[in-house]
Length: 206
Length: 206
Image (cartoon, rainbow over all chains, first blue to last red; front, side, top):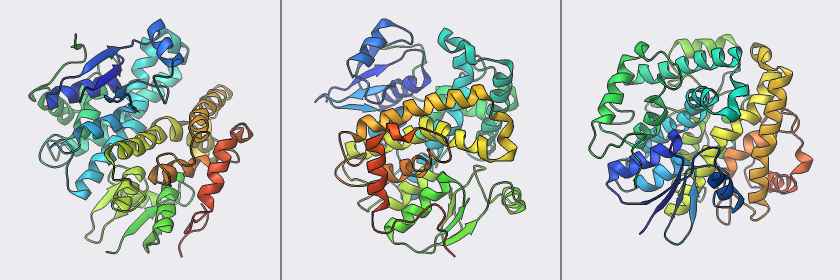
């Protein structure tokens, strides 16, 4: 099966999938579409992005699958990255919904409104302060959990770790969050980066 | 198995689970904890809410399972509400991540900041206008999809429909969104409300 990934090089949601491919040791075709480029506008116009966002995984029959965390689950099914136990599966999904609802919407958003010209009007002092406080609160939930265990669910890494790693590992430099307050998170970030097959955010397939 | 649900009567995320129990025809114990009450503060203080939010499903051995959409998947596994086909499963999850990332954070938030006293300071004209526009854009993604098919994934209702129904069916009256612009969504809302076992937002178990 030849899998094609439409991904945004600078985006954590897209990076998740490139990281998962690395950990799984799978080959894939990579089509990079950067934010605020004509190529991305054209992909929108031609209907290549069914729910209007990147990343999108395209199966070999042309079927597009959107939503980063759904793609992670699809790729991980049947591997150690997705537990078989029903309760552990639900826990993995729980952390992934937490990531999309409470984490990405704060941690990634605070970075994004400072980075992209088209969102700069959102970066008011009030909004930045509100996102800083909310982000520290979300990171504290992760810190409390990781103080008790090495990985989010069970005894080894799962897609929950992949999903949460993407925007957490840049929360300090890009988002301005005070990561020195979260030692257990920092230890977990280091553990993830040592796993076989790890690729960095900026290591794009050719 | 006796399942206990900690749920917030006024919250769509909690309502999802009560609706799922209705559709599955399952009995459960309901513990209502309303927003801004001493009872909710006590549940936080005693550690009953592992990730700091409602709803939480408690299994008969006392294991708590947080995150509304993860609870839906846990309850639906092995029933027609969660497809067996890997691609359809990923599509269901995709709509559920969309719901937590792009829908609940806009549709529910616009309702919430107008409803709850502790969030009233967030209801500035600028924020309300921004959320209105973002919400209409999110609803348009749903409208385009439902113009083509009766249910979000496949030929019948799944947990994706349950997840999206909760905050969509109150988006007009509570959120102030212009639902007359979305006829396919309105037809789908009517289909969900006619399913056997349906319970309304305010129909709480005794």
